[in-house]
Image (cartoon, rainbow, N blue to C red; front, side, top):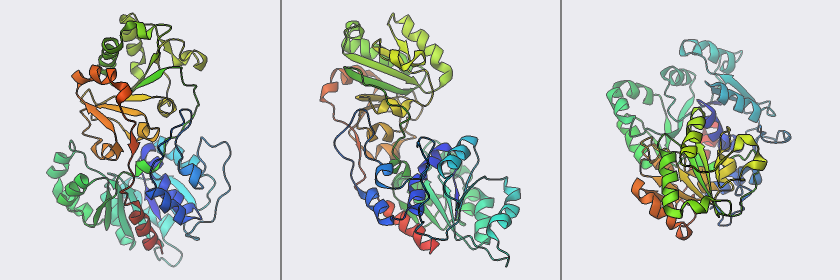
Length: 408
């Protein structure tokens, strides 16, 4: 089997499928895919996840690599390719304990025939490749052509075409029709994606939701929750920090951010090069704040915390009460709502979520508002319901069954 995922996020999203392939208990993985999110929340810990109900492969956050289990596909050899260093590193670390999983960089298309001979042609010059699974929008003509030459079934997983990129796809539809003629089955993120893919010539399409919903966020550090209500402004873009701070000051007053205030605001800018810019903005409002880079023991010594270190988003979702998703008040297309929903945060987002519509469709109780509604929404925060992921209509078992069928 050959799995191709472009980068870190795609490699991470394949975790559920890899768990299914490598775990001895297939039924358990399918049952988990159909289970509902629990209603309870532990502020310091994530909700029950794959790693609690399945034997997940070793990841960089595991203290010790587990011993490899016996695969349900006993003799299955898996080639996992990627094209970015972050994706490659994650894959190598995650599957280091599995000798039947080989991680490689995908070469340029002109070298693919030599690559295939190395991995998939045996001494009798017979192809041993049964299934090629390509993730999201990696529409490589040479890759799919090669797989068909090797008599392999081909799948496109977690397929999506955003509203912003769809006109470009339509402009070159003659080219994409050649590619989709080589793709045997497609598992799309949404019905909207399914319609767009069909218009480009894709066939045998099923909308099963986004696979990222089945891979719970990873916690790398456990922080103590402050004694009060913690708001998290997550993945904010230029202009959004000022909008959020001004809305907070109007909604709660400056005294609520004083030493004895019960409102806490943590801000995580999307781009690290803006950390200094956001610090100057907070200073210009004459507000006291601390920076996480000063040390976690000083994290909430002030009521405003600027998170100016990398890799902290999920750690703070885990302790936040209310998350305000950035990239949605500015016209950036929004950010992933599944992560705060996994921790059942109250979830507030702006209306510009055109890149995340399929993910928001999987989240219950997401409050999508206009800029001028932010202040009134904040004032009413005690009456807002917690978000959660609705997996009751999951079609993921169909994907797992299809994979099993073509590997048999």
